[in-house]
Length: 86
Image 1 (cartoon, rainbow, N blue to C red):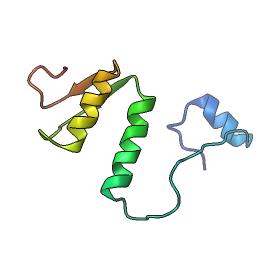
Image 2: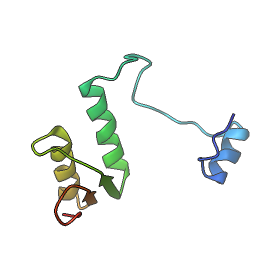
Image 3: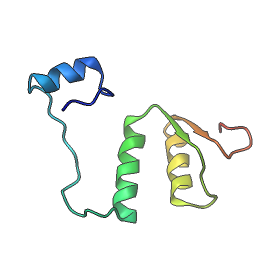
Image 4: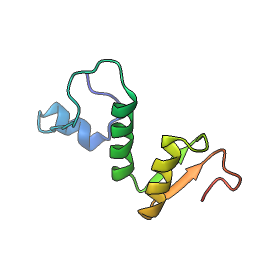
């Protein structure tokens, strides 16, 4: 089963068994931990040019991650910030 959300080009590659997706995560842990969630979030930040966070709590790990993304020159939108973009 190929998800419809994949771009058509990717769907064709999956169908032809020519797409390899690599993940830095192993099968364990089944239940995400704070560390594995932050590892995943860092990967997303590294791959993205623009990020949108509906809500970030002040002083949280996610706020630090958003600031790090901004320092890398990425566009970061946060829904609960006064201007929506910083």
